[in-house]
Length: 246
Image (cartoon, rainbow, N blue to C red; front, side, top):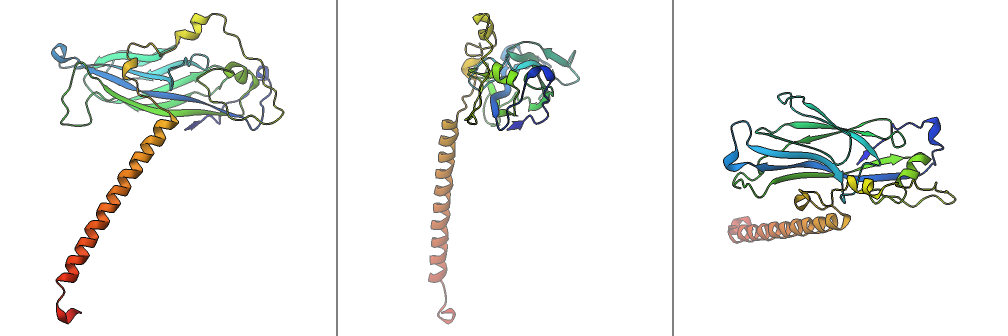
């Protein structure tokens, strides 16, 4: 969870209600396709690195631009994406760390946020064969938390599906939401119909609870197995004890 404590309030943004905290769930990562017969020594994979909403909603109302810092071997390694979707596609053969800097709109936060993602092109399992049809997908879920947001930010965020609003303090009057002039602008940064959308991973609290439950069952089964093995060893030890030891 990333907490944006360094956001400052400008005079024209209005008051900052206290004890209010909102968060924006995001997913960042990459999808990489092996080029198969089209692969060459220096271009074995085509890949896309990105930052998206956890439910594929448009992040444009909050993120102004994303800067991707690639390996120095690329031409123009600093790539700036000024509008959603915040993604970058390239081709290459090597894995490396990509620095992703998110710049927010002034109503949201004045300090950029830095993320780091290690580009993955090859399957984790060495026994897995590479396929031109099934890509390597590596994604991470995080939440950008904004404590004490400005009223202008609240107006921008109110009612937006990409934002998590907690229970608000009693007596707090919310500012009216900022209307969207053109519905097509609202859909511009949507990744729900993205060409790579079928490979996106799904993140939710329910999924996390199921994963935790499954992991707990595996741990309990492993503990029970170890207990049976220990009991068996103790039994064998007692059986082979000599009369003088008893």
